[in-house]
Length: 203
Image (cartoon, rainbow, N blue to C red; front, side, top):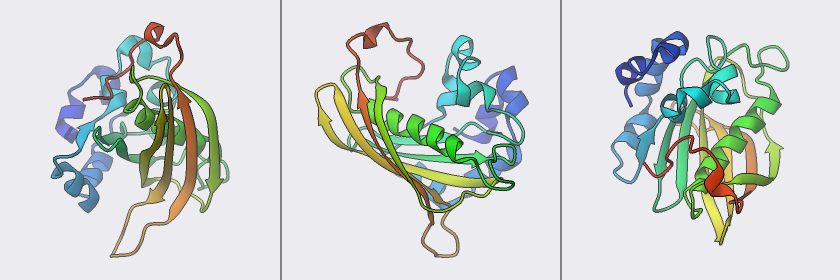
């Protein structure tokens, strides 16, 4: 979804939308590659989430705005391979130590991202976190773009296991730096059908 398309979604999104950050995302070689790859479907879950639910959601509501999550994260999913790639900008008001993004925020975003990847493999495309293990590797500096990658490693009925990590944006041919790695077990509860549908992960 282009910067222009996001800007037209709603009044709420116009308030938190930063076109300069989105323009920087649009110019990334990784983004250009993903958009040209027919295996991946692009979406912005925070944009399409129902308004009556959005303002109750931590990452789509309270954490959005200038200096925080100033643009909605972009997600690419491959539903055949159960794989996901996401680009997120982390602002300077999301820190623990000055200039360094709070580790708890990274845990929240990784939990949400790995869950979304797991939904691709679950019967009802919805589930809840049963277990999350994280290993922090490097500090995440504020006011930068980051990549989240995730893939489903195992599925057993209503259970899905996913591995993923945050990494820096590759620059000048250098390998990206891993920020935090995670493994999650997501379980589709028996009462899954009663949960409100926030977004459709299959499109």
